Image (tube, rainbow, N blue to C red; front, top):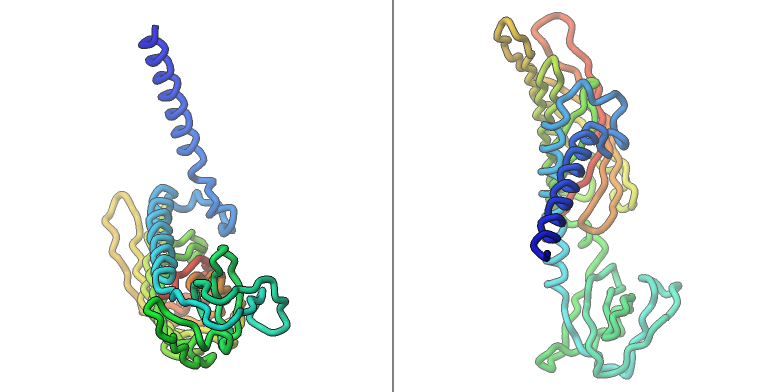
Amino acid sequence: MIAILYRASVIRVSKAVNSLSAMCRRMQPFCAVKALFAVRPLFAVKPPIVMKSLRAWLMIVLALFSFTLHAKENNAIRVQVADPFIEVHTGPGRGYPIFHVVERDAWIQVIKRRTQWIKVQTPRGRTGWVYREQLARTLDETGQYVALDDTSLEDYFRRHGELGVMVGEFDGVTSLSVTAGFAFTENLQVDLSFTEAQSTLAANRLTSLDLQHHLYPRWRVSPYILMGAGMVDIEPRTVLVKPDTSSNREVHAGLGLRVYLTRSFVFRAEYRNFVVLTDSNDNDELEAWRAGFGVLF
């Protein structure tokens, strides 16, 4: 009797899994990417190719984001309060109210620093901000005083790298882009990107290098302008005759917007106007937009 019931339950689970798989295959063209970004229908592209690539790069970006957060947690410093008490504020400023007090000999965890304010975690798991002078006499695990060096605001806009994935449209075709950048000053960043847009008529591949100028880099929502150049490869798709792949140089300019979700995770949206330099007298002008996420490291 038990064997019969077990076999019946296995058959029900198998049918449920098959039904769910069939539903996912039917719903794949109407994915969240289309709902968020697509202006034209996705029948002009090959959804399985785009979706598989998109899932792969999203997994890579999320893995890098998790690794960055884990590394920052491991770099946190654990110190002991030596003063009679320290006051913990809700934010990095004297205008924020005091919501907790940590007494002498208690151990706290130093998470990060913003100018003269330090974010800490108390023994009770509460997170808040402490003025730097109150932590001037904290002790490490060996009983020695911890030296907290003065840090200016400039240190928080140091040079950094960035990896990201973006989706959008390139000349009316849904596209997937992978980007890698490096900010060598507070305002300037160089960015290398590879874009692929697959349609029923042609396969478009774009490799571009551009320079971005961030107008207000210290804003949480930061606009920027960009200009650059690259190569456009177009491979037509025909049945009777094997087509020739055309490669042309391009120059572009555009506008973008960055939103700092965390100190290591950003949202980006861009519009670009391309001029493809062809062999004919008339150059081609294309438009593209894209949006996605990036990880800073």
